[in-house]
Length: 117
Image 1 (cartoon, rainbow, N blue to C red):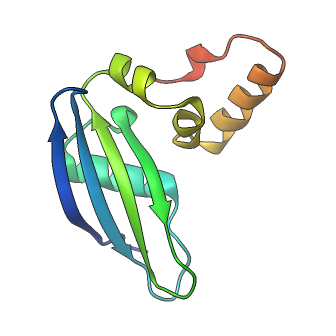
Image 2: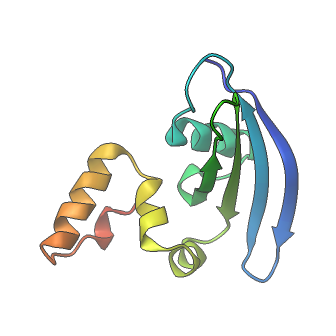
Image 3: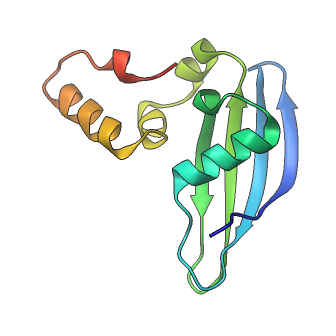
């Protein structure tokens, strides 16, 4: 399924050094698209690093065939680690890495090396 992403609003946040984008995806007849596919597509559209692109929010209301979302594109990994909560950072990883990080955190073992930035 090709993702047709329409950018509704784009703001630069110079204090945090990130770009904040509000977007809409139409997906008539199918479910909400995968978060990682959306992340890859927006990073390619903006010409940014996929690792520094964070899908912050996706919202689909019952009965509608579109999703409204918010994505933050950071310029620096240090800023991303500081401003994004742990659960949002984990949510933007592949499933295998997510489960591994959560298991390591439960066992109180080091896990920060598994983040790619």
